[in-house]
Image 1 (cartoon, rainbow, N blue to C red):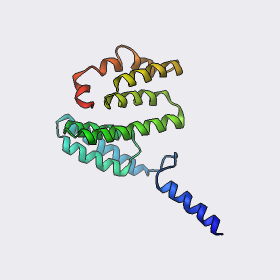
Image 2: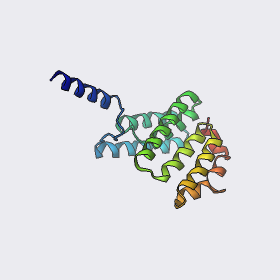
Image 3: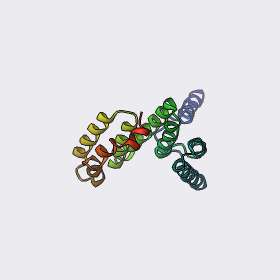
Image 4: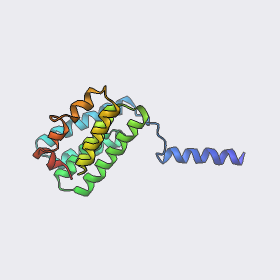
Amino acid sequence: MTRLFFVLACAAALLASGCSKQPKEVPEVAKKEAAALVSEAQFAMSIREYSRAEELIQRALKLHDDMPEYWVSLGMALRKQENKDGARKAYQKALGLHEDRYEADKRPEELAQQAFVLALLGKTDEALKLLEKSVKEHPDSAELKKQAGPRGFPRTFQTAEFKALAL
């Protein structure tokens, strides 16, 4: 009986600490509210209200923190406020979530997103190598081919807008 209790307590501790690869269940209403907050944050970013955007994204992340796109948005809002350390942490969190998603379902689009976040982290060469390798591993992926092509990420990474968001 004591051993069973110990095993169950260990399993509960692992799940509570986030060690599980299973995505947590988020109620549909929380997902919708988080999406609305991020949409409002994107508008705030467009009118250069970066601290408001940060606040809205933080609220969205409290509701739905396993969305790498939200972490990227947070990193961008922080970067626009010259908070490079905060932006780096947010981008790294996004990268980890994209890596977990790829491991779970092997969707090639996740590799393209990983490349984008790597470039935001200032690792453009590594991002382009990942894209090149990904196209070879997933030759049927139109998304990867598009992003790896000359009008895709290689061009995006050179723009002033992207450089203003990257580290």
